[in-house]
Image (tube, rainbow, N blue to C red; front, side, top):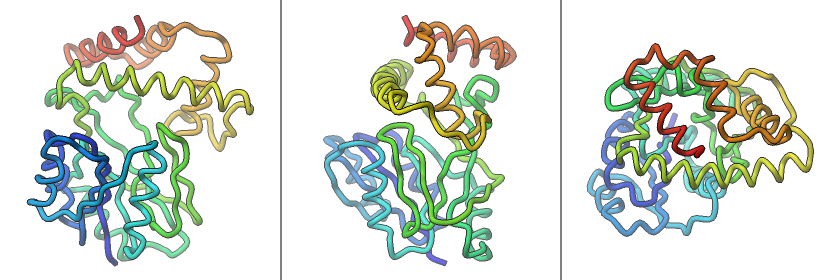
Length: 257
């Protein structure tokens, strides 16, 4: 079974090397770059990745373009530049694709959000099951941001984890990025709400549909931006994460003021 790792990038010179080297268990690493003006492309090429360029329109279209490039592969791992595939997950993927039933077209993966070496287990939405390992000819990505994957077939789960390093470029970059993303998602959720609340397969927030439904409820109730903060922090017991959890919660509060 041939496996490709798919990474979409834009100015990821800080993160791309670690991501690529964590994916060497596969047959090919494919980078789809959105005209970076830093060293992202050069670093990827030096590490043996196959690099393509496409102007960025939205995340779903970018991932679909990457899936088309990987159409000749049996499986594709969609991974972000600030994520790393752990050795346990890499071994599990290699073993799983060898014996996966033909009716399975997607495997979901959890990830550990890291804050300068500490796992933010209680204040990062864990465990959320992300659609990451797919049969590229039987998958398409929808939603312009916080994407969801639609497949022709069933799905399974992998027990290994991705490591997510959202703060590797610094806290100010994390805040700026989430400001942009929260604005884009608010517009998207509002448009979706006009067409009706999200169809649910489950209310479990570990799935994208459940999380989207809960966000739409906040919008429909005209809840202020402080509401998710004031509810999620006690429920998630972020104080048990001591300094790491408090620092992350303060970052979220900064976004909402």
